[in-house]
Length: 164
Ligand SMILES: [Cu+2]
Image 1: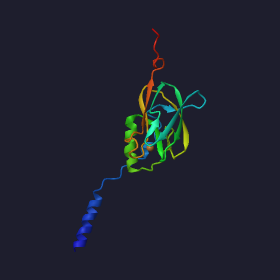
Image 2: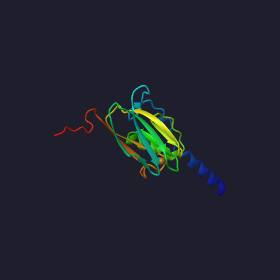
Image 3: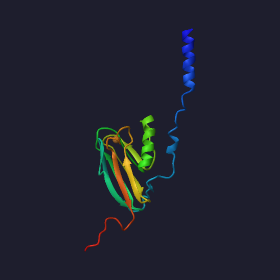
Image 4: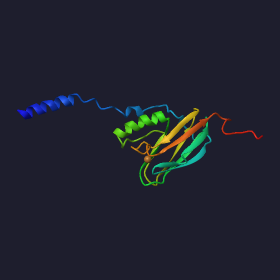
């Protein structure tokens, strides 16, 4: 008799669980918060980025609006790392989804996940001025410092000073 009651209670509890959040459909986006995939036929500037535990080198870059950057990304660390280019807001949201599904596969042109000693390239065109970031959304990595900052400036205003 006691068992039956326990089972009935357990069933009620199950029925009250919220539906699992669907986190993966949000990945099928066609526009990107930090610009757009680059055009390989157009000129680009190469920036090499190294990933390790738990940082990027360099951790800060500056580009001009509409400049194309060819990121050559290398994992020189001993664990898997990611490089995901987006706004801070988007990466934080994405990070929450990653906590629920740490082995989430990414197939987006604005990011890559690399095993140790692997490298990859991302060709990116920064079409908007503002501040963006690249970060690693494997749980805890961003919090431990795997974050880099991209400042996109209006062309012609990038640190050019007239000589006195
Ligand atoms: Cu990482």
